[in-house]
Image 1 (cartoon, rainbow, N blue to C red):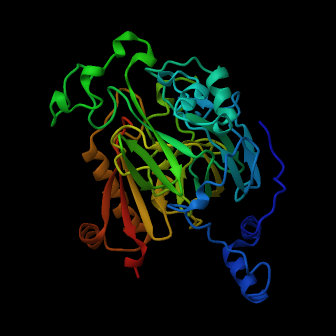
Image 2 (cartoon, one colour; image 1 turned 90 degrees about the horizontal axis):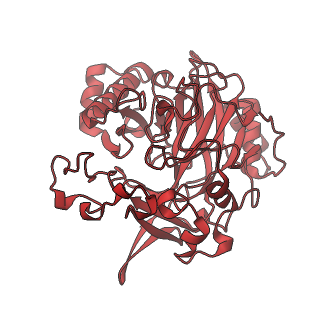
Image 3 (spheres, rainbow, N blue to C red; image 1 turned 180 degrees about the vertical axis):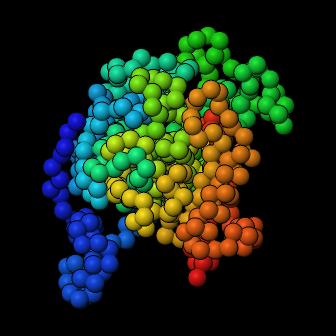
Length: 452
């Protein structure tokens, strides 16, 4: 484990963050007001940088490991010897970094798309075949694809994600909450990939070779006639990966002579703390695919710049990790993946104790999120992960999201529970988070402006 010294690069946003950590938000605002509009401190902001959705500054050039601006107090690259591929850290994991509560960390993540076994596990060749220049391929992605050896890879059983961490946050204990503020997100490369794989996704063929309920065999995607998983050779499975360029803050897909153009929406699909109590690195309960009460592959597209994610803590130090970086995703993530693309993210990690008022009460037992405009209650169909089978009933996820919303409105906002239930029906929006991570998810959006 390494306890790093704070990174020396200084910028106004970081200066504000450091001052806020020392004197508190209220103290910072009072100090700024007293110093006046012309002062350096008053020119900074405690509000996280505006989201880069649809903006050109989301990509400012290729961000190779350690290159470019590092905005956090600490920096964590995705070193091949430290990352986990397909699994998340357990409560017994050895941290790769230690930091104080309230400090910030910049993390270089690596997307799994372009390096997976069905793509040849050779990003230079696979991405090069789509016109990507060698200098636009990340060296850490190349090294992980070629030299990862912490665990033996089984493409058919392991998760796909490259997981960076864990980070020990000093003072975190089981029963606390880790508050994760996403301060900044930048694309490391000017492209992403959206993949659909046989047996996975909203329209996947079942394990018995039948169509899932509600559709016919001819409506299965990818088309069932192309399924060659019986070969046992991933590159011959005939999975589908759609290369997607990043241009002027938009994703661009080619379809014959036509193209599809959509806004980017950068966020980490995987933000979590250690949850599984397994002792081995590849226990099914630590598979990176299903989200759990410790977060993980939660895939909520609202967790971009300016968002806050609250996670109940199950291990000393919390053992925070990230992965599954996205450039864009629609609710549902129906084809299997989002527009997967490597990100550089900067986060503030803060330990919240019971009774402090620094985290919603519901967050001490279940993940919860918020943005500047909304509170986000969450429901999972099977929050214990891949243990004794896998429950994917969206009705269960929906009910849990509603119950968590009611608990928040009653216990944190002081509303009568029956009135809160009526309000949710009249004004809140509940969306399918994703249906492709074995454990399905639902999240609600409760507008903050509605509660006066």
